[in-house]
Image (cartoon, rainbow, N blue to C red; front, side, top):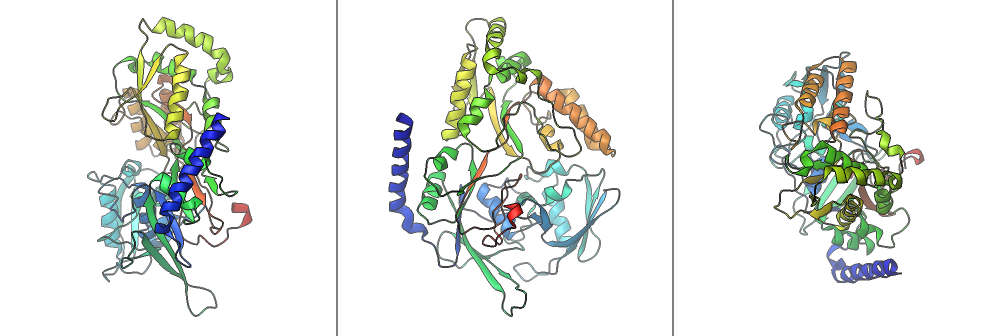
Length: 491
């Protein structure tokens, strides 16, 4: 009864605010209204700083890279109209489409090669640059042909190149597929593109307005019918969308791949002891956490790797997962008494704001409380024991998962792990690379350098006007052809 009353109050509050603000985002006739949770989108240079969610959406749709993702997360042509991969996997050759930058200058392979070298170079602020460690050089072969040369094969290279972080921003503009209407008066950005129609003299015009909003305003605007698509939802704010009586199939989830769990944020205190980390991991009731999030298809995870990654066997869950949490707790409580002297430790956890983060904190407090451990939420500037990783993988390669824990960025690491990662990066033999990455993942799991919980949660709100929307493992959604119906098999 109390839960029902709280949910009803939240719905009424959201709708009340919506009634006062919905006039700000009335639909333009024939123009789709798209909101991204977060700041207003801007066409930022990925090499200068990590992209915000809004910037990533805009760059992907107005400043494409050599390739881009379609609605289902499959790679399709972007600035490059064709490409070929050598038999040994060490050379990717792209033919760039004819075109001009916004200032009228012709797009050349030499310009594109220089931009790509800058984006993956040592001075780049792009967090994706580490994934391009096997790139030896990027060269222009002709005025329209570019080659990416590798020191070792990287089958997932095209997926990396399709990421928004590899979008080509030149002098504040890009090559599409959408163009920006900078004369539009409202805060939202007007995006438009022309689509050549078969047997039609005039191309069809596709237009949409793109804006950013905090999660409450985004959900309110959608509920009021003044937004067609809301992108960028995470576990932290999911409850705000779930609290509303939305139309059937309006709330969509991506089958996202990546890391969602806790990582040591410092190398001192109780968390520096691997036995403590192992105890904390085994004490988490992952099934209860997953049930509380109420996300279809979400499964608990107890390994750093997930099933279905390229050229590597699916991870084997640790043996303790076969024992029900209720049966584990007696043994875990005994182990805690042995490990901890009075008083028992307090573990601080750094979490973002939002009802989903509150839910996670409550679950950790309950589960670790059984061990006698006190859990406290770290302040904004406080050094925490554990921090949350909530990141979507940029490719299907297992390398990204394990390289997140190398010594150059992890608070607690292992030199042997770094040796494995170095060997995997340098070998040209794919089976050997897979074996080294597999060994690295087991090292991470054994030393509990990461406490996995599940896959990342990514959600969107989709109106009935949007026909061509599909969830995908990269949680990246093109804005092209949103009103075009996908094949039934791909919905």
